[in-house]
Length: 305
Length: 252
Image (cartoon, rainbow over all chains, first blue to last red; front, side, top):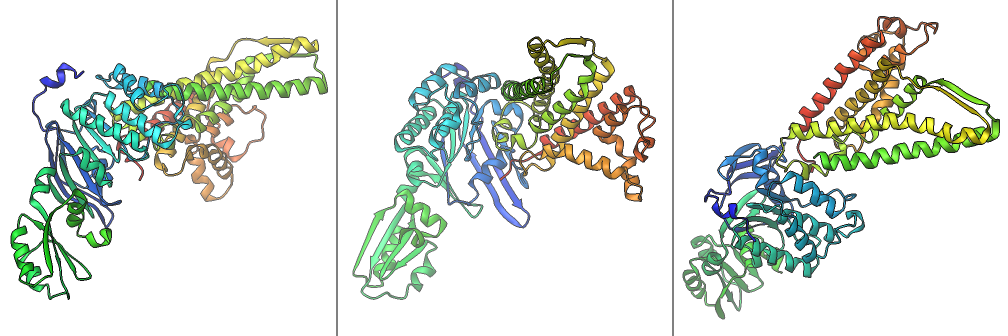
């Protein structure tokens, strides 16, 4: 049941990040990140390990000092008050393992004004959590399930989940995705990072791809799928691709005599350009999110080979 | 915040005082069986240094929840709708309350061990039940001051788990160095009023003890002055630890 006050809240942007930059000495961990996450969106932040996803989340939540930039939650800067509306689950399970889920629940109930005890009990059932058993006696996945249940039971307006499915078995992963979709349907905005493209594909409506600290792609998943096309051409002998490279900025992958071009709205023109090189066959295909991701970070061959 | 810290401290006090009672009881049992004993008497106040030292150790070991004790938990504690300075104050308040319970719990454990064993060995127990308030506050203040230093050290060197416990041996080493005659020692002697160990050790010395350089240097101290100095140390160290907690980042 969605609390009434949720629905009455205005349509203030839950999360707006402007030019967020984080530097560790000479290393630029996050480079000028700007994002605007609309209310009720499930936003998937994709990137390789070390791409800057966790740094971005830690910087926006004030857990690490940002070098520059601005972050607004619900139209106001970060303050303790904001955290009553934000639930965060870190990548590293930071829950005290000597505590039981019931003790964690009591701790959160005292801290968060909208913590829903009944919902927490329902989530513990759904995630198969023994409420009275200390977390140190539970597996990594079960600890993660407790952290997620606590976050959902906060009844937040914005959830920030850093690699939420880490350690969960396939059944619990499925239940997590269901919970994400259900919360989003109730109006909760969800930002979650992952390097598992399949999870993002199942839950996210909008994605951002971070690579080497930079946001290299941000778009609606459906738009991406409809605009991005993969054009494959098979040649008897590999021709000079210079005319294609000069004309298009799309990433081109060469695997033997097979040429793949990740086209972005210009697939017919790309196909025509490849046909001009006399291939044996040319075909245009839909791209899945994995291929879109690889094309965005420009490392497709490395991963698809 | 108070709830979590209460759980931490309740467990720690239980283990600490319980372990002390068990060990003390076994030692006394051994001592009375081996050597015999026909009576125990004395003022309760004489137990204060023992309780103060053990509580100081407890404070340094378990109570420094602000520093290394909250390395991972900070990812949870710092995203709660509570200002960080207030969360720090709540942790400190619970820690200090736990130390008070520990302090008097240790004295109670000591008395209880005597009381339980005395009848079995035809010994008498004659205790003067009053506690000198100034000395009680001084020894509690000593434990709090060690806690303050420990919390501050824990915040400064957060990457080293439970580094706060090192402050006690460092105080002893500082005291030892300050008692030397060279110029380096003179500097350490000048700032020795920041060392809680030196303050209580010299204020509790018998008047006929040999006068070392350090004793001469601290001869102006009276128990009330020691209490005031300890209060300054507590406020300064806990205050700085709170400021560092406010500014700290999670450890990668």
